[in-house]
Image 1 (cartoon, rainbow, N blue to C red):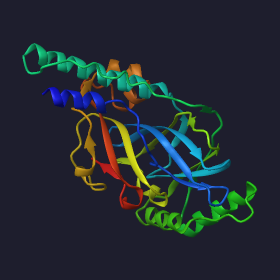
Image 2 (image 1 turned 180 degrees about the vertical axis):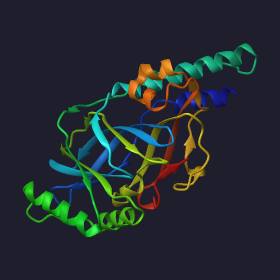
Image 3 (image 1 turned 60 degrees about the vertical axis):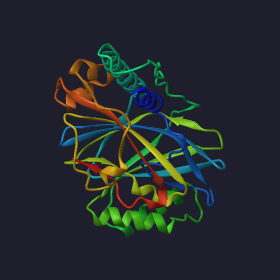
Length: 295
């Protein structure tokens, strides 16, 4: 029991060492490598609609603008999010796990207490300017044409769309995905933290894009705060055995969720028994053939 408790204490901190998830990147300069050393994401899904809150730390091997591509199952409403939600949600999970552990101690089922980390999110520098556009794509040729035209209008003389990116976009279009978010950020060798951006869209499954990152190299560790009315059991995308539950789910009330996000509380219908937990997905980026889909 002591080992189990120590394990969840070490794992509950909501940060990643190496992350390249959620989007594909097209640098305006050729032969530039893009790195996402930290990514934070929180998903609230009610069975019909999803709120996806994202923030990433980004850097590049040289100064460049980068076009990031995020596929979504329907047209999103995009707005600035509250980056403090990640910290408050992690602190809430930690508090509830401490309370659960204290109850176990009172019943003689645990041997020692180790204080879990506070769940602080570390930032390097704010990127205040996002150039975001939501585009409805009808076919892969249209996507490539749009991106190349966009890059040329931004001053790129010979825009090069990687073949791997063309292939994965064609896969999304064949699967019925025709909405893409394009986000331009300016990067250099110093890590910078994106302001949180919130995407709200209709979907009959919980969705998080992963295979779009097949265009990148290396390994990834994706950590997601997941909030739903009930626990989920069907994973038609990435197999359930590859989605690791970092700790036992905690139940939170409408009042507690409202302290994190009023919009998420409204989305989930002010329930008193919502389930909050952290999922983790690890693997080689080139190995991801499917997205995270759950019901």
